[in-house]
Image 1 (cartoon, helix red, strand yellow):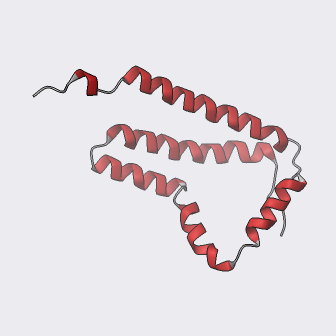
Image 2: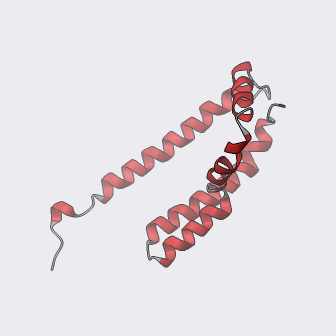
Length: 119
């Protein structure tokens, strides 16, 4: 049985969308680097940081779980799971994202020379 052509994915359109997402991410990274290049933290950033860190302690563990879901190891585990389910494109995308994040941390963090504000 053949798949109807109106239901097959438009690969060219999907690749354009992925390229747009990549370019958007790079633009966002460049724009966010502008205030970071001086190594100083604005009053607004300091205020938001303190507001978030002064939330009730009961929110720590749910927040920590969500934050750790995006770490490099978790992303690579997700890539292996996708590979186990034969979702090859998803597995490759997750692996590239996980490794890219590790490289971003290694390259961008020393360049910005910014630290988290103190409590």
